[in-house]
Image (cartoon, rainbow, N blue to C red):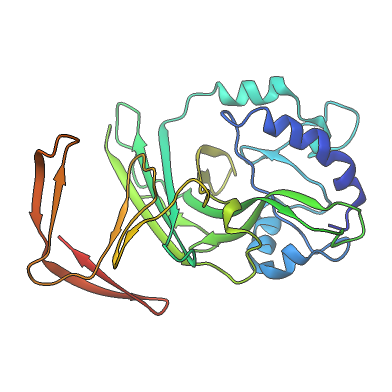
Length: 291
């Protein structure tokens, strides 16, 4: 927020990213230099870890799949202004051994975020316990708007800002995955009070080689409160709405509770009695898990 060169390079850089939302997902780590930045002050440790990991000594520095942007425009290595469409296309064309699907939603009262990730091995062989691979997850705000500049560079809009990494910046170790098999990762976070707008929240997952820094694949899921409404009747709630893959049902359960699913004609297609199997306490919320 106090970096002059950032303000100069961001407009064209953001436009290029905006034109490639099906090919690239961005995460921006706000530093606390060369001057004040309130977004950094809200989560300085995750940013510091990534700055150290990438060896960043000046801003802005941009990386594509973990590698600093090539200086082919007479600027410097890592300059966002040097990124071109052809470079995005070339990186996107590289085949990946895995696919990543990300689904995210908020709790009914918008105080918690739930992230469900499915990583699938697309190769013809087993992806063993690759010690150098890490699964990393970041909660981002797609757009943070200030009524007046929060720093000294005049910018009031900041895009794809990292707000928290899960479980932290170091990520989760990769485990062996057979050909065609999938592994799920689930994260839930009590949203920090410093989130500016829950409507702008999104989740990013990427698998990265810890040694070479090369990113193997990435996935993205955005949550929009205005679209994902809650169906509520008394103590019964279903969300998100509409739903593509996974939904959450909240209700007061008893020993005789059941879920009955019907089609549009009223024909019963599924009827299940629910039995409580666990009670989980997370961040002060009591969640009942049923089978």
